[in-house]
Image 1 (cartoon, one colour):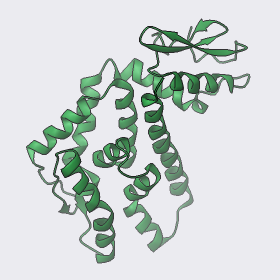
Image 2: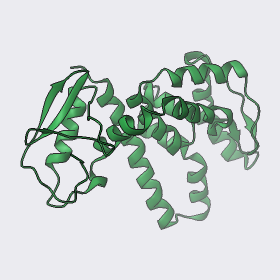
Image 3: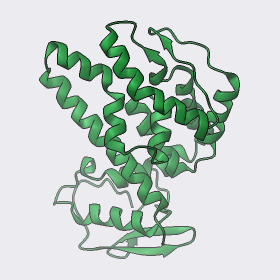
Length: 238
């Protein structure tokens, strides 16, 4: 049964335990992913969240209103079968992490970056064993190989569901360190999102807000916070 049928065809959803986790039943029939794989979820909490998304669907299914279901599908259909490739792509952000690229001027912006970003680089050094070296400008600076290896190992050890969440946290923020800090609760996710937007916030302060850009940023912020919430579902007990 494909989950992306155009119209609602079920009356009720329920969570059921299966080997290695939980699944969602629609009128007693197990939900499948778009690739026809079994939708086996790691925790009851995630299964309940998916079931709630299905219950909330109107007559015509709206996939964009189902972020937990979509993330779980991605973990099973894409990340699980390409784990090494996805992990390598995410770990690659460490080579040119946002937090390492500092403005030369104005000095006020450089100071704001340092105040927000230096504590995160300090955390990466102590908590991740991955000291990274900041530089001025947009050209990347070669980072210590041992640091890149430590970051790669940390990312590669994640399971497909964790890696799916980290993919969005890193891709949306532009920073592997911020993504890992969100995973490890070093700072609250909304604060980390604001930290990732220091350059954009500075530009808005100088030139005003562009409505289209602000709308796009709001969508990215929502998705960043959803990715962090997805991690809570991955790690929920029971």
